Amino acid sequence: MTPSDRSPQITPEYPPLVLASSSQTRIAILQAAGLSFTAQPARIDEEQIRLALQQEGARPHDLADALAETKALKVSGKQPGALVIGSDQILAFKGQVFGKPRDPAELRDQLGMLRDETHELLSAVVVCRDGAPLWRHIGKARLTMRSFSDAWIEGYIARNWPNVQHCVGGYQLEAEGVRLFSSIQGDHFTILGMPLLPLLSWLTLRGDIPA
Image (cartoon, rainbow, N blue to C red):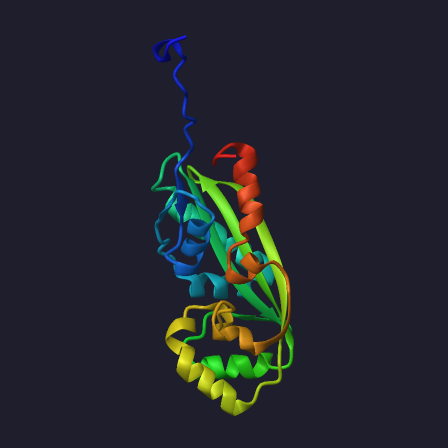
């Protein structure tokens, strides 16, 4: 058989993947996993949506899910046929929900409350296509902060504020923020804000990414 007699190889076509976020952490996670995707931020007022849902009595679990879905739906309407990934993270502690600190003073107050205590991180991911949700998952992690000194936390904020101001809880485990903790229970990617393994499993089983 000559090369010309062989049947041509058919390359499977995969749907476009779009991340509804400009988060450098989430972008880096998907890139490191070898996914081919584009990133398109969802222009929504996260704080306003979160406050409205809290006034309606929404639980932290529901807040994370609703924000992730809102992001995915916002971008999905502009990307026909694409699988749009929305993700969001909520910090829950003793009935309170913490968002991204607005300034160093708020971060100082938040860390003061979390010091020597255990809080939860809830990371939601929702995938939408053509304006409809297809799949969702919420990962949960429990983190215990150590009893750090006031002087140390002042130095931590001074050194890290530009990098942590966009992070829920005001810390990055992949950087100096890891020194805030004495114990961590949960999936690493959930803590970073993207429950990656369930997402990859779902995409693979559907045949949306190479197996």
